[in-house]
Length: 105
Image 1: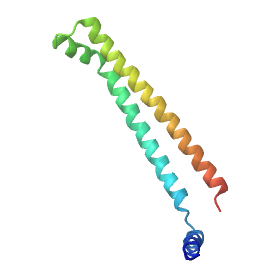
Image 2 (image 1 turned 180 degrees about the vertical axis):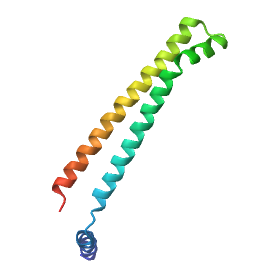
Image 3 (image 1 turned 30 degrees about the vertical axis):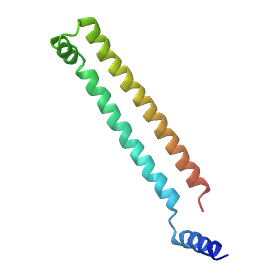
Image 4 (image 1 turned 120 degrees about the horizontal axis):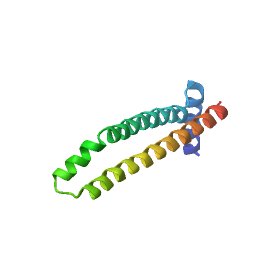
């Protein structure tokens, strides 16, 4: 019984405080997802901008030209996938925040 009262007291304190810790936590997750997406997009653009120089660097290291091109294009493809996943994560975090906001007291 005392555990129930303690739990109830904690819920009551959060309800009366005007801030919902779950909602605040979700806002933080949305901000982090936005930051991550920005960083991944910048990383993708950097890979695209340095494509030719990276291919030449690989060739200078003794990698055949065709293989050097495949390596760098694969790196870009992987980064594009990371950007897509980051976009989906942000959308999911925003949807959850919207849901929490809609049903939050």
